[in-house]
Image 1: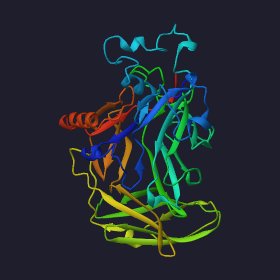
Image 2: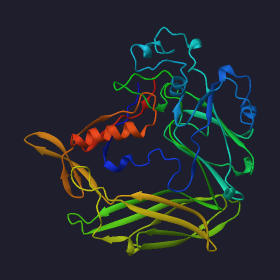
Image 3: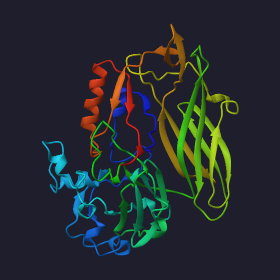
Image 4: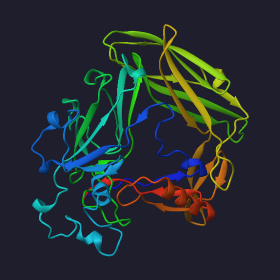
Length: 400
């Protein structure tokens, strides 16, 4: 039996569209977006050790950029006609029940390959290659060396971060290659139910950005701010700040994790064992400056502005910054409960203590998961003009 995960209810903001697919991230990391190419492993005699060598002749490979699924890249290269036109979708291999598996190019793994330069400022530092959502399993190679296999890179929607400094070469071309395998039955991936026909490649590929960044001995990951109001009043907000700090060295490290939110500052000394990752938390009970008076609240569209704050974190070792992170957040509190009225049970939602009427609809991405600021902007404008404030996101389940 296929498992279905409950859809997410997301209160939308008109600011969600800004820089969704920017070339660099707020933390300064480089987005490896262009100059990729793909090819089916069924058409290759070479293995990852050869394919991931700089200067490898990728003859008859299909050029693409990422994010991109295999099908999206092949449609862009005119291998298949636009599935949105006429009956073209039904002509794709693997769509019809009588298609034989051996004739389906999406049954095999596909290689994604790119070459890149390393900025001079990265020399002598730890170098973090990061993936957000590779569907579904992958072997990762850098410059002819295997960095991770398909047991280490497995699962859609997962975040992966690899220190590839030891595999790279300064002032030379470097190459990374991924052999990506499609999801199998009951893998927790994305499928479309009644929203879209499931694409025959089962959305195999790289869904979101691939980035490269550098740090000193300690890196900062996953900064997050939890906000709590003193409802029914909104005169004060308690902020709880968390982040992971990762020691990439084989020796212990001691340093200072420092944070700022506008004119608020806070810091904590952190001791890390060799190769240790630790979650560090700043609570308002310990740091009273994290209790904000008269906060600028985040409200859903049609109710109020979507005010945002910047959190800046840095980790210092002997006064020298090892890594820094910046993230934006809104101060808000969302709650819900079941209400019984005249035997009718309904769910009541509140944002910042105010009852909110949920007006929205279901939202699904492009069939081939192609990123587009233009399309996202248009979709959100439609919602805004219809006075909607909610999107019910299509959720993953066991694949077909």
